[in-house]
Image 1 (cartoon, rainbow, N blue to C red):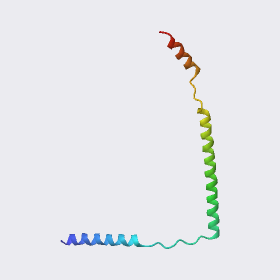
Image 2 (cartoon, rainbow, N blue to C red):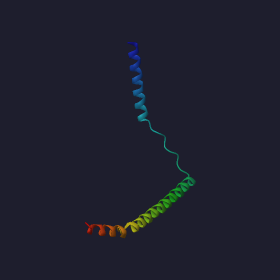
Image 3 (cartoon, rainbow, N blue to C red):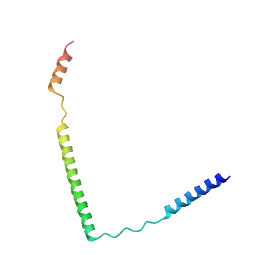
Image 4 (spheres, rainbow, N blue to C red):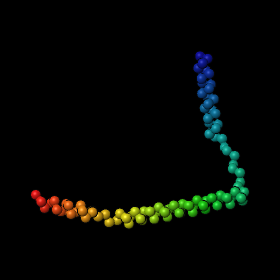
Length: 89
């Protein structure tokens, strides 16, 4: 009986602790200084520029791939051998 009471007490404590931690509020973040704002803006601008460059490279690669594979034509040797063997029986 004593073991059951200990287990119930521990379970209740964990439940109450869990509920309290869910309801707790974090303190507000410290305001950013002007230097921090400038650094963040510079990082965002650099990331945006890099993303634009990567997008341009991907588009160029897609265009080159399309142009390369646009007119898929069978090799002439394959056509000639197929035509020459189809007439013979």
